[in-house]
Image (tube, rainbow, N blue to C red):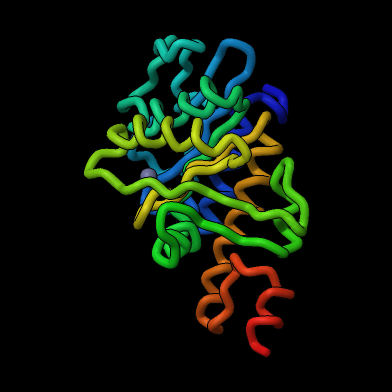
Length: 214
Ligand code: ZN
């Protein structure tokens, strides 16, 4: 099994995400699509202890081809949203505290501008406005699928959907872009929350703020 085998990658990335606090308490995870095969972890497992043979394998339509022990992740229809609607090659779901906090300081959209790390999100520059839609949480993860799908279609520039008081789904064209996006979005969520604590609105360009103070 090579280092870029999706089974190995998922296990390695889950260990990294665990140390970042993104998949603790068995929540969250990552799914990779390679060709017509989709790989994802079972539901409710310790993500940092995941082994390659623990993974579910599905085809492009969501049919389970290989079922190890346990149940398929409740995130499956949400991962498939990004695969199907946006042609993603990898999707990660994080229960990051930064993502959760970002949903508490925002309405239906998380907005920032003039932050260097925005450049890590495909199609965004420093002077742009970066917007992530926020959907309301539901009692069961799979019930988020419809509202997530609507949000993905309504925000074609976004590579993420925040879930209020829950976390975030982030994707990219492949695992490397999904990882970069996840890291940059998380940084921006944390920055916006900390800026708010200082009384600075991250959605307002710095020039406008200087003028407003006069
Ligand atoms: Zn979740």
